[in-house]
Length: 463
Figure 1 (cartoon, rainbow, N blue to C red):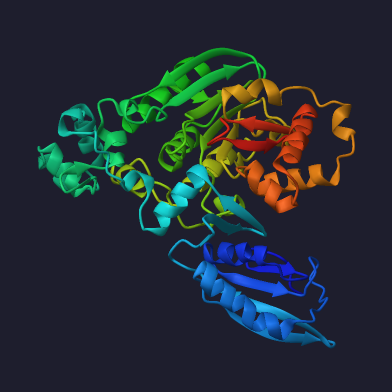
Figure 2 (tube, rainbow, N blue to C red; figure 1 turned 45 degrees about the vertical axis):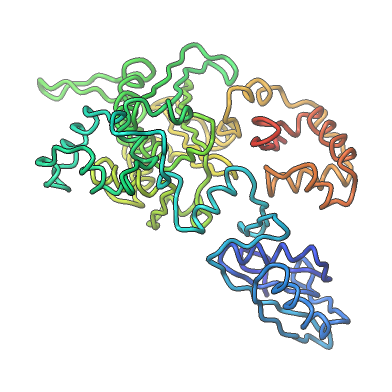
């Protein structure tokens, strides 16, 4: 029996709005649309199967530019339609709106997620784009020398390359004499002049809303990894001292290897389109690393704990870090994090992936929480503005019944946190004023919160 998943979608009847399903499949890995089948996979049948057999492919071709194949099937005298949708390398839009299949849901792409999708479809990543305002005078020669020392094992020629422009060209960081964004982040004197968001924020939290100490690490990415680790060791993490003979050993309450790998992953794989910095939150029982940008749709959280392909969001950054010996083997970083924690007799780290950010929770020695406590703490809190809102106590308001429209709004926001009030109104066939009234009520109940500005931000479902 078929079920709805990343490759199958069921609809009891046909509506032209379901062209977005075809567009979503085309923008992902392809799939099948079944018309005349209920959500549970039961064949209901349609009376106009032969009409739709011609109509759906025609509309798909004329409106979307997607060529699909369709056929009529029969089960106990009930006819239904199967529409096969191929994967398209070029982006497919429905009247200017872009959709993508993610699991069994359809997400509308907007803002940063849309920009990343379009770049990827045209064979580019964010870090591969030219930064016009960056020049040779902006290169940090100390960073160049640091890289040469790190990369000598994998790139022996770097020792004798004394021209920074030639070196960066060999690393693929220039094009026609101009520097790419990756060059700015890796070797710039002041990357934050060009990308203010390219920094790490560290905070010591007594509670989710009470912070007692904080630091900000800026500079190029080589500097950031080194000094972030130094600050955490010196100021935020306790080291347990032991001796083996005359040798003094200091073991951090969070495994150093796991911590280093997690920060490297955050620096390399974060979405630099976002205005949010990487956050490292140090609590009594855990250390939480959050960075903007979800996992690639080809990879699930479960995949991170087994052998998996590496699909870097920023391919140039990943390549240079690999050549510098900072990334040992693509696709094994998360496995190493898990192994380091288990070898230290600590619980497995908790990986969390949402539509907008990715987080890793590492637990401290002798202060571990239960699995449920861990899950509760790795909450959808990305920016400081959200902190006070998400720490409000859950009250009896959550137990109040919601209207059908409110339930639908919550469901649609869970599927697509960046969905607009206009899109919600179109989906539910009610006015934008009614949508705003319902959202205001959901916010009052503490079920919805807004992260970021009206344009470029997104919704989070708390309860």
